[in-house]
Length: 470
Image (cartoon, rainbow, N blue to C red; front, side, top):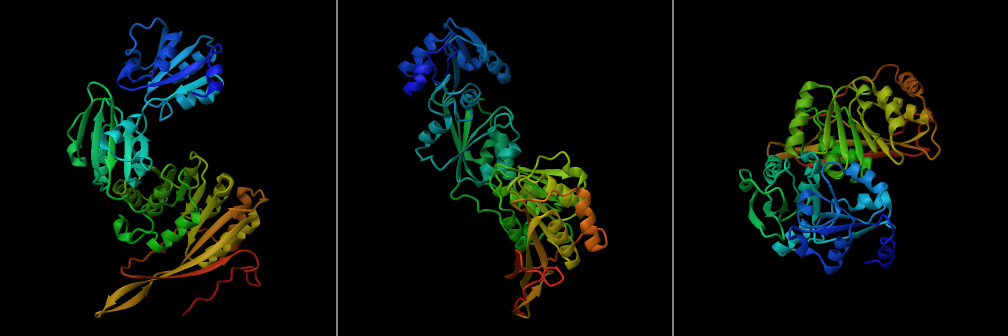
């Protein structure tokens, strides 16, 4: 134990956070037991407090009343002891108390976590394992992490039971080996092993942890085949364009992403796999595409993709500020969408748009220049191999402009009206929805023409594209 913490925690109002397993007092060291004996206020869940039925201290039962506990401790001058499951820092109350009251007042004494005990029972290493909590949160929210890990321990609850988790994983095409441990380290410890289908009809004690193991982790779903997605008549961002566009977003795993004009959701789903601890908001107004989006969300277990049925920019108002924005469709509202995107994007973020025509490209770049934003333009021209009379020919798809916008170090504050006026003037018309897709199969030839930075415009200020090989 840190001597400085030990000394400060003898001061009035000291808070000790002690981890305990299902073995109760038998799982505690002599030092931890001595601390419990000195406590004047004993806090914990009913199960934890039941381990010490004869303790004379005043008791505070922790249920769904954590804020009440924090208010109580704020003015408490007596020595307080908070009992928590296993390691209080592993999805427990320890960090919250330390943040609220400081380590000068709070001392945390961890025990073995249920995840540690489960991996010990299996005899396998766990430093590379994911540990995920399903307590009090939507099951969808943990699926990207669970599906991407080679081995993972899941702390379940009464709603997100092993059976419910197994069902969701099977719907996403998973076939992991499953181990459920009940009452670890306690007298009623039980281990059930099997495949995910074996869990569907079983009930387990509320106190359990689910361990999943796979021979190999799922590959990152980047540039997935178009045929894997449900979509309407080829209206999908093609795999190669999708891979370039998602790469340009430069996502981190906790990113908040807007996919505006999400269509069938192919970009949103691949972005969600990279931002597996983040959130992707897929905005779409077309009823048929919304149905496809929901089908694809379930098919890929993309629980961190939230479907927003509505038209931008109005549908963007209630969303959290994004770290990255992809614009795949605008429904004639691109100037207004771009203005909102520029105003709401978090520092360090990026806007990436897919465009099919040079007129739309010129208007977008004009608006970016007027707002003081830097732009990068990449033309992605795809030719996919197709069989013909026992041989192979290349069939070209429509080229797509992938435009990336980033604020400069000294951005110009642009009003929405200025952005709309600039784009409308450059284009001379409202932006319309675009179908830049063609359904093809076979090998791929990828030709990228890159245009970025200053000094690469033509004499009229319009973008100048590098000539590619014929």
